[in-house]
Length: 439
Image 1: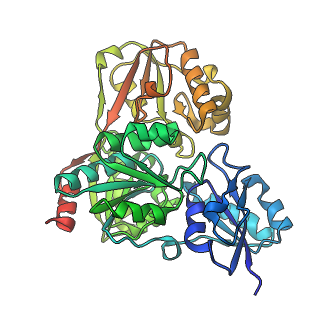
Image 2 (image 1 turned 90 degrees about the vertical axis):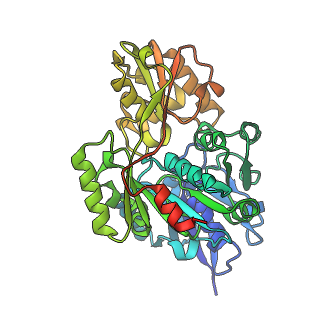
Image 3 (image 1 turned 60 degrees about the vertical axis):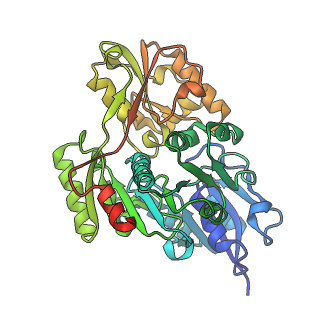
């Protein structure tokens, strides 16, 4: 039987996982290529032979998604798998139409073919959109479980932007490990806060090997989701975060709606800064779609070192990159802090942008007067640094989860904005976790 010739459309995350769990060593299929989008500088590489298995001794090439139709025609492709996240449902169907018109079938893979079973309990924290507040929710869950006497590790959704073979299994227990693995700003934003709380972090490319290693040293595994993707692991408790600043998006984005329909528990985050009518709208939407899931409301209170230093100043606001780009948020915690603590002016960074940062604004024009902390490689980090230092401002307000001065040399005073999840009323995450895992 001739193998089904397949292309996997991705962004260096879900695509590799789907390949590893279903296509690798599967003689019924031949994966002729990956395509890549969303993440800069991924295309033009190969998925290495060391990870691809015995059927792919030369590895698998990675092309830009713009080559998709050409690749379907040249390789006589039978099937195209869509495997990336945080895109509108309509966007997915446009891609399906392009693929179908080129002569191939279009596939979306679900939990049955892609989730891995752990020998330890798994708590998944996922979301309906990027930037909803997964990270602080995961930190809150980890703290509760640690206080209950459990040892936990956070396994983070993949962010493999370097040497894929070297990054197959990564373990982070200290800041030195971040330097050793040459982590990008995006990776540090996710890993550093866990390390600050004494939680070991795993990440990489081969998520079965990652899981098997983590199982050796922990009691409970936390799946720390990325974008709005669904869990790579079968779960014992599925927590999904929703964002009332984007009311209605919980039913309009892929695969966020999948998470919504998988949820055991919803956390409606940011209720302290959202409009009350939007909080109600999201609550009603969640209940109508998954009435048996528990709903918890939470806030993300802001903390800065010196609020008085912000008052009256002309400020540059820096926010988490993916939240502003494909997350489509025009502002975040830094912008809220600048307004709340009386900044005289939030200065538009776009006139000062250079190189890849300037290109980011061109690709995502709705980002507005906020600087996305893009840092997928050394050149982009340098462009970010230059943009900050070019800016004609009195003060920088940084709402990324890390201390940017560890990776950038900034020539201006900086105020960091920190935020943690704070549940409001009952039930709470502690109630849920004690009921599920109480000793």
